[in-house]
Image (cartoon, rainbow, N blue to C red):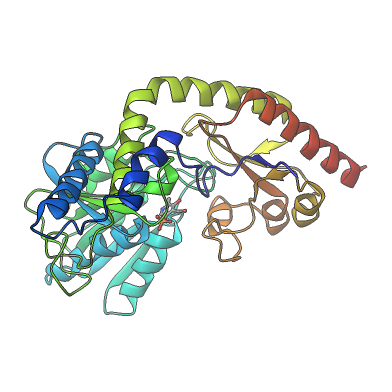
Length: 367
Ligand code: PLP
């Protein structure tokens, strides 16, 4: 059975170019990038090219640390609060991904005061609430660039300016925006993931502004700048680097393509209500609801389309969505929401066929 893949926020297919670039590092060039001999040096050189390819999409005044995932990058970044013994507050947007939210809440069990900053009905941070919360006690502010569930784009540049005025560090979870939209140049710590940009799973990165010290997360042989021990995978690094290069080269083309798919989808799902801001949104995400719909039943009726239930937290935990709840949606509205995610390798035909199948099944249910 062929499946139309419309779940590009959960993960993206591997770009063929990334696959081709990875292959020699999996098959023939198996040297350890930390070995001093020629095979090791070749692998290390490939890792450094990949690092530059990722860095090319990030601000100039910092360094890239490879990690196993964005979740690890975020854990690494949040460790910086331990360097700031005079400050004990972490402020994050209420609609952050579990990677940020649950890590912050864990710091709440370690003596830190954790503030969850509210969003309005559009899913956008309420800046007055942020202003009121910031102070000499704030160690770190966390805000995501593009929300994984509803696609809303937060004003991270502005949030960062406010965090800096209070002397706090700014962590931007850029997982869903990296390679697609402009990265806020003033953030201090930026997390990204390979498998959201048509790169491989099992690799992410943290960008750290020069002058900021990140405490060691994984102790051992001292690889990856002494911060994150463990042998790097040249294949994964090369895959991420190639994916980042492709995003840079194809950015304008990709955005036009996504905008065309999104506009088609909006017209085909005209009977549905969009969750979250329509203007401040990455168009590759369409989170929509239809009154009275049983989404669990819809998903089992439409097996030929891979999409997400908007009600399920997109971390895959099965927890109900704290994001849709933060927008003020009623439980019934949350349960009648779905998320469609369009990507580089989707066609107009995918969107048309998926819309036909979903609308037909929804119509059968509601008639
Ligand atoms: N942050 C956001 C916004 C995400 O969408 C995800 C993955 O869904 C993550 C963080 C975690 O990324 P990873 O799977 O690389 O740990």
